[in-house]
Length: 492
Image (cartoon, rainbow, N blue to C red):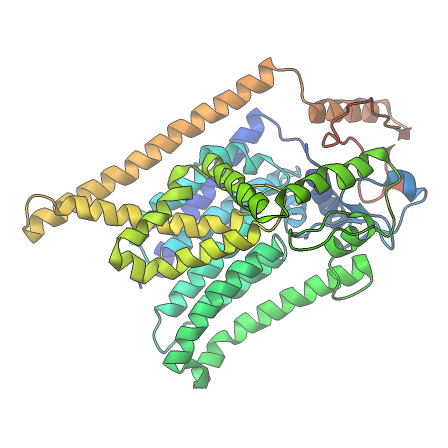
């Protein structure tokens, strides 16, 4: 295991974290972020609920008219989503006065966690370089860091977990308590962001590490149980908090808000191996019926066969390549060709491929579903690039001195080259974003925000009745209300 002093590790993690926060903030300052998906409004409702000091809200009067996507109104009024993204937005509102400032913080936490993960197996210059790769990634900073629904917390969860597992694997007989604690923190973050995907990946990697611990006889040592005691406590508290959230929203400790929503409104199952079902509450409005009975069911029907599953996997892989870049989407496979890397990191690649296969059972294509795979892709890409640079340095002069100098020179060139390209890409992506917002007609979400602002300036209580024209895009939903509709100056 690569060892670095504590202050060095902290500093190295803070640099990409701060860079990601600043980059995200700059983009939002130039092009303000607006919620523009059903999921965005759901996460915003979670944030507003937490802002009011609650985990759920009383069912409002006339709640039938307030029904909208991804929200339950009985037995309580709450969104179906985990609390992670909403908690980050509530934190952003508390500290910086804007909901979307929480997205900047999530980006910073994720990039700092990625750097910490890489420090477990790589020299500091490589860990810092690839941490900055994530912090300056053009698609992520002009995408996720500006979206109320993003994968940053799931990235942080797996980065913490994998970083801890790598340190446990290389620790020998005596395991430092910080490594299991990092795994527990990652699992808790996963519960609060993308529980299914994180659980799948954590189970595979955790089983792999556990088998190694059994071979070492760690479970028979008192020191091992002392080392994992803080982690067990943190994980227990996280599971307990999720149980409290469940009970507050659904009335049952073991039923997730997501499960309750799907029982009440869902038609298409969450996974392709499940069967469709009839909702217990049905759909009062045509838009909800179209979404659940047509749009979602079409995705399920298209994917619920081996041919459809393969087509879905093709589409998902192509989306990853376009959103992540080909290096992260495809380059990790290169470790198969290098015996040393295959022996050391092959199980991580296998875990990523198995997890991708299971995640592909979700019939909807979204880059947030595969966010937990990013830390593994970044790790495998980093070790692959480093191995390629070392192999290139071996060409020519065979003397140790000459090889060492060439390797350091090529490493610096590769890292600075990557960062330079990313910086240029980030600038161009941001400029395109600014130009598009200035030259194109305002998006529906911008117009909705303008209407809301105008009504607030008029003062008094305002009621907005939304009636859609034929052919309306059901994904452009204007009905959103905060945590306390009876006291809100505007009800949609």
